[in-house]
Length: 359
Ligand SMILES: Cc1cc2nc3c(=O)[nH]c(=O)nc-3n(C[C@H](O)[C@H](O)[C@H](O)COP(=O)(O)O)c2cc1C
Image 1 (spheres, helix red, strand yellow):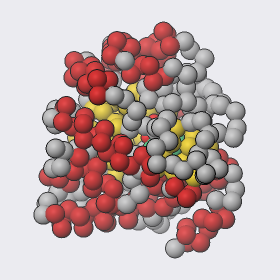
Image 2 (cartoon, protein in one colour):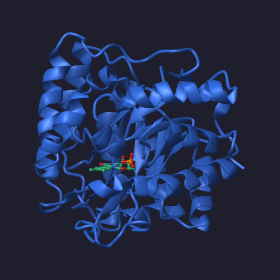
Image 3 (cartoon, rainbow, N blue to C red):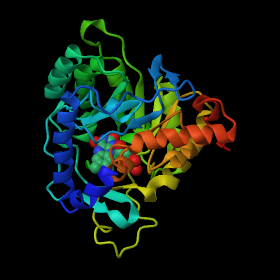
């Protein structure tokens, strides 16, 4: 209710300024004694994957907390896990502004932020200190990307540098090779480039001989079938632990040109992406056949969207744009509706529903 009242005001402000304002407010929320209630728990929602316990399958997608400033706040909104980043080895300011656009009529965003973040060393230092002060109740993923100033050919060493600094702090690490906003990044989804990056990070000793966390690859929604097959082959051959589908799209299907921001360059997220990302989840599931967990992300606004991704083969789901439009209560609403849908469909748990409509 409160968010519905203030949203029109917030949406009059430039989107990136609103985001920074939200992060400042969330910083205050993080310091308050628990008020928003704990993460929703219900035996039917719980997932155990990679030896981790997810109290529910609805997570925060990468890009909201790019520099891992607020590791403790996401559980307060009911998220069952959170993915922080994308973090690059070198600190970088990203692309020139404006670079984030609302398409309200389409429940969508277009962004070309370009991995603005504090860099792996600064993040590792701050996050390490914060986690040592107080543990986080939900699994935390850390998403790493290539520094803009580093040549594509040197990507494996660049990812390795971030990985070495951050992997010890993460419950899982995501290799992001699918953002459309770093030149050439998506070329790293090609089999040879991808396996070189996976090998580089996996062969790195971690400080204190720590165990390597599960390693995931995040893919674009714009890949053809041959490409998806290649990624699945690399993932299975190199011992990758899971896939995230999908990042934002460079396509503009279903978006009227009449919307002022529709022609902006960048990655499109939100409602226009829902069906496309679900189709990628379904295809990956049919290629993988349950051998690797999949995180489904793209245009989840409500529990029905989440349930559809799960039925298509997602073990866990994430949301970003749906959180921006739906506000702080969105994750809880998604979870409540998800429970209803499970019950109506006769599934006694999320786990039982995964891939039930994979085709
Ligand atoms: C403003 C914005 C910034 C994003 N930044 C990142 C990022 O840094 N790393 C990443 O892997 N994905 C990033 N994403 C993609 C989201 O994690 C997600 O994959 C995509 O937006 C689809 O989900 P959604 O429709 O729920 O937003 C970003 C998305 C948005 C809207």
